[in-house]
Amino acid sequence: MNREDIRKNLRGSIATVPTAFDDNFRVDFARMAELTNWWIENGLVKGKCVIKVAAVGGEGEKLREEEWAHLLQTVVQASKGRVTIWGAIHHLDTYRAIEYAKRAKDVGVEGIQVSPPFMNVGTQDGILRHYEDLSSAVDLGILVYNTPWFPGGAIYPDSLRKMADFESVVGIKWSNWYKDGNEYPYEEIFDVKDKVNIIDNTVSPILNHKLGGHGYIQTAIHIHPPHDLKIMELMDQGKYDEAEELFESVMPKLRAFRADVKKKTGHDAGEKAVMNIMGNHVGQRRPPVNPINSEEKAQLRSLIESFGWPLP
Picture 1 (tube, rainbow, N blue to C red):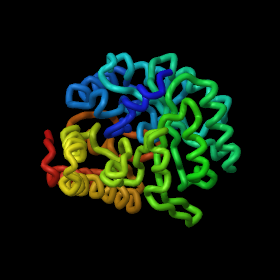
Picture 2: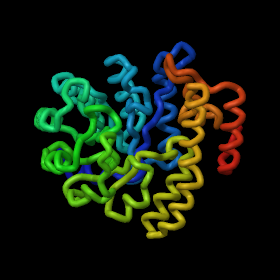
Picture 3: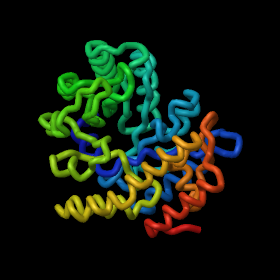
C-alpha cells in the first residue's frame, strides 16, 4: 500500500452514492455500472472526487455480504481506474471488519470507510484497539468515521490523534459535535492534517478547505455534478465567499426539506428521491423506509427547479 498515493486521491467532493434497486428491492448491478459511467463522464474523476459505495447513504448496512462485495466489484470494474473508489463497513466487530476489508481489497477498492463498533465496545481504548488491529491486518486505506451522535460511537480528538499514526489510517471523517454535550473547535484535530486527510462531515466544506482540509461529504455531486465541481473550483481559486454562497444555495435547503418531510410523514426525501425526479432512476430505499408521496414529490420538484437544475 502506498499511503501517500492513497492520501493524494482521497480529496475533493466525496460522493456517497445511492445503491440502485429494481422494483423488487434487489440490487440493480447493471444500473450501478451505468451510473458509474455517467458520474465519470460528468466530471467525477480521480483527483477531484471519490465515489464511496455502500455507505449508509448507499444503504450498505442493509446489504447481504455477497451483495455488498458484488456491488463494490461492479463499480470498480465500471470505473476502469478513472475515479477513486472507496467502500464502507458499518459497526462490525474487529474480526468481521477485517474479513470485509480484505474482500474489499480483493475486488479493487482503494480504501474503506469504517464506523466504530459501538454495539460491541463503547470505550476509547476498545475503539483504538479495533482500528489498530484493522490497520495492521489490511493493505488498503482506512477512513475513520467519527459518529458522536450514536451512544458509544464518539471518537474523541485524543483518540483520533493516536489513530493518525496507524499505518493504514489515511483519513478522518470529522465532526466536532458530541452528543454528551462536548463540542470542540472545528480546527481541533487539524494539527494532524499533514499525517491524515481531514474530511468534513459538518456541512462546512469551505472552512475545511481554508484550514488545509482535504474534502467534504455533504455534497450533491452525484446528483448534479456541475454544482459541486464549481464549488471545488472556486475554493481552489481562493474565492471562498462565492463558494460559500453557491454551497448555501442548495445543500442546506435540500437537508431542511428532507428533515421536514421525515418529521411530518416519515418518508424519505433524500438523494434517491432527488435523482428519480431528475430522471436518473435509482429505485426506492428498502423497507421499512417509505418513499415520498405525490404532494412531497411536487414540492421537491419545485425546490429543484429553484436551483436551476435540469428536469425531465
